[in-house]
Image 1 (tube, rainbow, N blue to C red):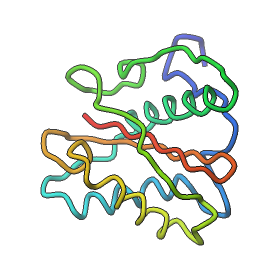
Image 2 (image 1 turned 90 degrees about the horizontal axis):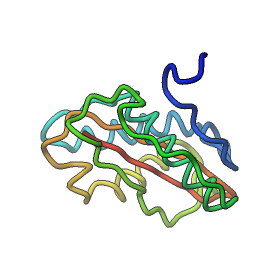
Image 3 (image 1 turned 30 degrees about the vertical axis):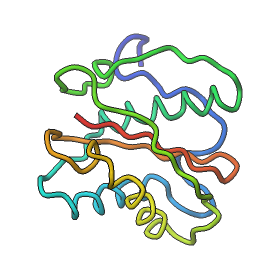
Image 4 (image 1 turned 90 degrees about the vertical axis):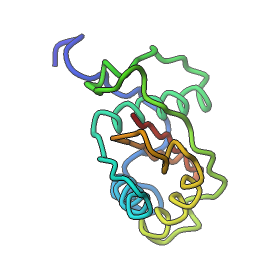
Length: 147
């Protein structure tokens, strides 16, 4: 890929966004969306651009938190996200360890419970969402974006 063409690559960060403690984190992201969608009054699509945006920001946070690195800022236009302005986005506070879970389903269920009280996550006015789960030393980091 040529520099400046396509989405920015997520920054390197310790830990994993693919698998942790035998749990497929990408499958968990899909399961979280499905659980939240089942409880919503209005449908919201899972948007790959918003998911890539969330992954970039989540890894940037982890890289800064664990290694003190600063990462180049990005905006949603870099990810082909079609929002009016920037997405509503932020870290989801998670207080449990991935080691407490045997499978993606149980982790997704608890993440959905933590996220559901937020109007950003379950309220009206949003058409799409994306999220990223990253695990470092058992700690779970979640970043959510909607527009």
